[in-house]
Image 1 (spheres, rainbow, N blue to C red):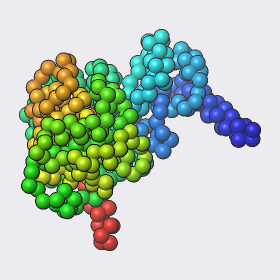
Image 2: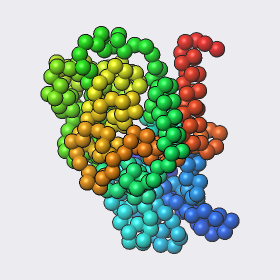
Image 3: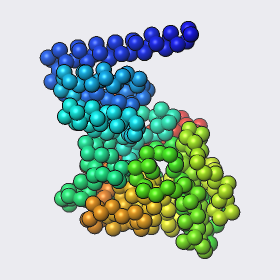
Image 4: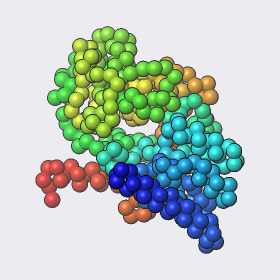
Length: 375
């Protein structure tokens, strides 16, 4: 009973604080920004996310606040609604409120070059994507990224910029999370290469990127079996998702069940290292498939990630909206240069792709030197 009272008091304080903040901002005319009510951003990264969305006055909506309170607030002031990722049950309510009052509803998510460290380990992001139509991993509808890839006129300067960035990412082994020290260990893990080498990229099986990006039910083990069936004379290597490896997310299929047909990589291994000596990658919707494309590796996609459907991948799901043939530089420029926002939440400075790559490279050098005991 005492615990319930403590929770109730805390909850009441959150509601009061939220309502007071809304009232203060809406009445204070020194604010020229549009107000954004933002849902589902974890407390540990709320300050960081404000820097990415500096065209808005950000007000975070408490997790358990009744939607009727939000509705009453929305009726009185001009706001835009922004939600992190997807939550089907909550999003139905938010979408209903937005449509009823003719308010815009946007989404935000991590960008493609994010940090040194996993988000599940509370590493702050250096990039996010704000999408006003959908989200890059939701293949069920248009997104701002899909529109860029379908219609943007890529000029030579942008293409050259993309080419230089791809070369730098490959040479520095930069990935999305960069949470594992790179090393010269592939032969030790994979063995001496004597066959075609096929890498199967595992994902968090209940993640929104699969739910919204794949129209068939499939597990990681199913994907391994498809790769084995289509490549019976190849070495099949299965790399589970890092969040699953460290126990941050649950698994829905057991890698042990496919160890008779695949080498299971259980030790931490960066995707940049994992792609070394690989000839073909199979994935459902993982960004790692795009990172493989950047290295010139053949990629088979079972779902419809943002990089499929543009003539560069072996696609098992066809999205008819994607009707343009792109070069790898055009695809990269759309996804990594034009679409995301880059920002340093520590220095509070705006970044671009190149500065973000340099910053992550610098941080990785410090981490690697520290692990080696170098001052």
